[in-house]
Image (cartoon, rainbow, N blue to C red; front, side, top):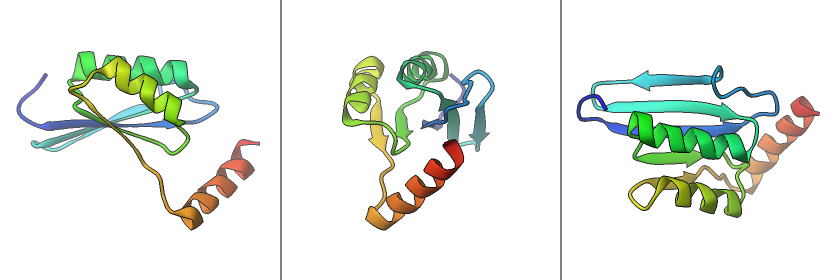
Length: 106
């Protein structure tokens, strides 16, 4: 792990994702943000496990598509010392996002 920085990751779902290809890193001297797009829960679990082990991720933000069970599984895999949060909006925001996803992913 490089230097003293807060290391976090955002993980999102997409039906055509390849987590080896669809990922990036945004970095400042004090902050590192990893982004990974995964196709399913199995890929999400593996991506989170790898990000903690190889990149020292301290906190995850998961897209709203993760269920409570998915979040619990990821929290168990990454361990107690790693935060796991879900980006959920209010009802109008969720409707807008779901309409776009339904239109684009069908």
